[in-house]
Image 1 (spheres, rainbow, N blue to C red):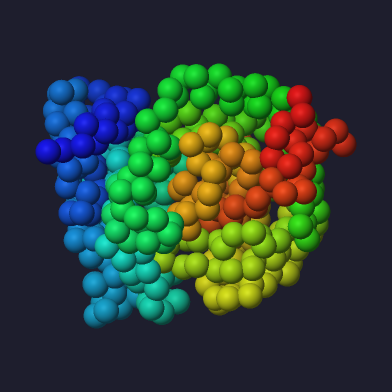
Image 2 (image 1 turned 135 degrees about the vertical axis):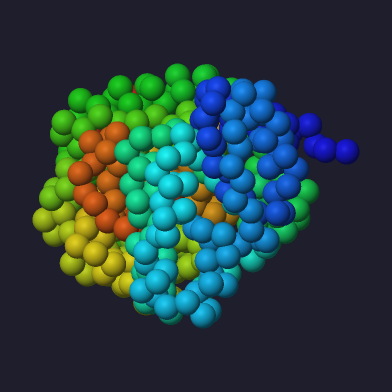
Length: 362
């Protein structure tokens, strides 16, 4: 018997997150492990009189199905170029739904840097189209043993956690986040202070965006794109690892000057961090500042889609900016890293403390 929460989840993705319209071609990219949710999503798309275009893998988190297997024999030069059928699919679809359901969250970690960069290059056109909101899209997760293991939970506990984070009253959550956006929008300078962290950047002229269940699921953040040359200072992600599947990097520390990372280090897997920062000219720019607001997420799961929404945290992404938030920086890198402010951290706006120890002061 199918968990009734799966049907609610599918309805949320199709009707709220993407708002599928009649006649649309909707790409649904997923793993076979997510079959219950994929089937309910397909049914929900059918009720909207639209077309589901299914891309299915067997448990991977590839940007394109079986990409990691292909990389075992294909040249990096070949993989960097999208074939015409992929171009047509990614450039002509009207909506995109990504259901991550990995069998192994470290799949692909052993690929060489050349192939990883090639995969990122091929994925960039669709990523750019999504970030510019040329199409409605949502990325989400379906509970699998691998995700539960990363979170240190049983599968049943992880299912309860996941559904508790996504099946919220998103209209009500949106109103709460609107209050935060209203306080930040008129501000000019943001200062983040925490363990081994003192970072400043400008959001002057930039308007925040509320994710109340439309772009990511779970939603639950207010995000900004800092002025590209404004970031100064040091940030240390000492509380949690920086995770971008399949890479996990511990102890990231970065120093910014004139908007760019000029020093970067990590206590483990530093090469993955440096590879992402050296991917292209825009990779060392601060592309996003986000504020975690989801009350259903209180602990780190080693899954950034959830972790960046932890209430009382902020996240900072190196690389691509987000055009709908005024971001102008372009890069194939966009790596969100989560900073916990609940134990001695604070946020200042133009010199006034607005959050301390993860709680708002206004």
